[in-house]
Image (cartoon, rainbow, N blue to C red; front, side, top):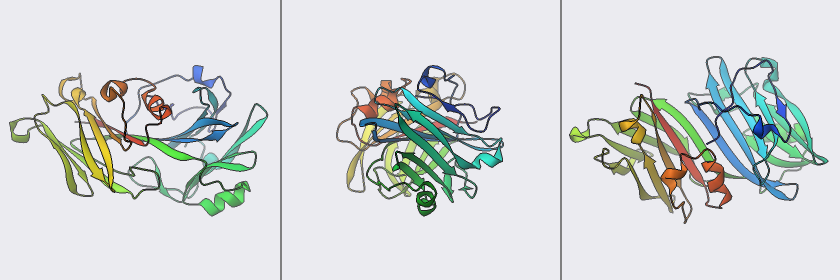
Length: 293
C-alpha cells in the first residue's frame, strides 16, 4: 500500500512533476486516515486520482495525487494545516501540453472524529475546462469557481482505504458501490470470547458475520449480502494475535463478482490496492484496524 506523506513541512502546498513517484519518501501509515481512489480519463488514457486525508495534532491534511495508467505520478499536491491561508486555493500543473488545475476550499469544512470532512468543502480537479473530479457538498460553489463543464460520469470511485485506531470496537461509515447508500460498519473484537478470541461484523447494527476461534481462523473469507449485492469479506487478524507489539488487522469488502486469487497475500503488497483496481475487480473497501491498548 502507498503510505501517507508527512503532514509537516515548510510549505503548505507542494507540487511535484511526473518524476515525483521516485522521490516520495515512504513512511509507516498513521492510524485515522482515509484514502479514496477514483478512475477517470485524462490525455485519452485511464488515470487514477487519489485523495488521502490524514490527521495530526494540529489538524487535517489532504494529499492529491494523479497517476497515469502506468502508475507514474503526473502531479501531486499537499494541503497542510501549518498554513491556514492555504485552506482555500488552487494549483496549476501542465503535462504534455495539457493543463491540470486543482481547486480546494476547506475554509468552512466540518470534521468529526474521522480525518475526512463531513460537509462544507469541495475538491475539484479540472483539465482543459472539463471537470475530472468533484467531491464534497459545495458542488455549485466549485462549478462557479472553476467555470468547468460538469462531467459526472467521468470519475468513478473504485476503492477506499481507511485506518482506524481503537481498543476493541472499530466503527466507520462506508458505501459498498458507487452512489450506493451509506452504511454504518462496526467490527467488534473480543479477545476472550468463550475463552477464545473472536470478532463480530455488524452493518447498520445487524450482525452479518461472526468469527470464533480466531487463533485458528485468523485468515479467511465470507460472503454477505448488502443492498442486494453479494459482498465478499476477507480478514487477516494475524498481527493482532501473533505479531510483535500492537499490530493491525486488515479487512477487505469486495463487491465484484471476481476477486483476487490470493487476496490475503495481496494486502501486504505495497501497490496491492492499485493493482487490484487495474484488474477491473470493482469497488473495494479496505479497513486497517489498529489496536491502541
